[in-house]
Length: 202
Image (cartoon, rainbow, N blue to C red):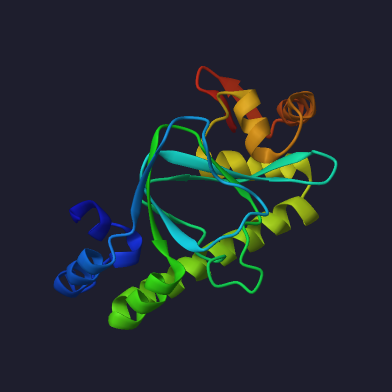
């Protein structure tokens, strides 16, 4: 119970009221091993997923089988916040465990009742949805309007030096050879440099 109350959804809420609600609507706890699929793109989304332990990544796959990693998330985090009440009611992404994970799910109807019990929980939920929407807008801007070189620089600014090219290519949604060529060009231009910690900004 204490772990759940530490989740972003319950931040600064009335712990007593939240505890009573969780006693009445305990949800379900799921354990996942690294590499397990937590949610599948196109499948029904009828619950909110709260990541208590571990980390996950979300990817999209088009009709040609091309994969794109949309985001990586670490606990404590809220998953599927924008999808639960959508008219389609399906996952637009596949969520995969990148480490062993513990996930708590709360059904859509119970979630609706929960956010009506406490204005703070409602505010937290709206903030979570808004933050996720803002993130998606930034990602769309990156991939629709920015060059690969700009995306690489932005990646380093957010995450620090690139230590593993394969991992960075996966997150950036490009083939490793393409990433290697772009990095080599940025090194030649003096925009980034290679050090013991990887590729970093000059």
